Length: 102
Image (cartoon, rainbow, N blue to C red; front, side, top):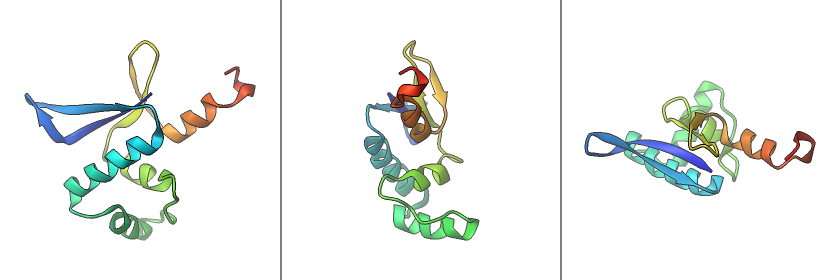
């Protein structure tokens, strides 16, 4: 499971934390967060990110995620409920590899 701390939406003085089972759903939420944070679309943000050395965005949003992760807390939720800030795409690769005992 993946999580995102959405500082653009606050309830009772706390940022909302959303969880997702699929990376595509987290990326869709991240697009909304980015729009509220900057007033720009994902495409506009990635155009600006190219000035900082980021490559073109891919269909799965890996580059977009990497760029946005500097300002937005995201990661995985472990089985015990603890949130771990990490790269969700690398985690997903690890979880789906039999050589890692999964």
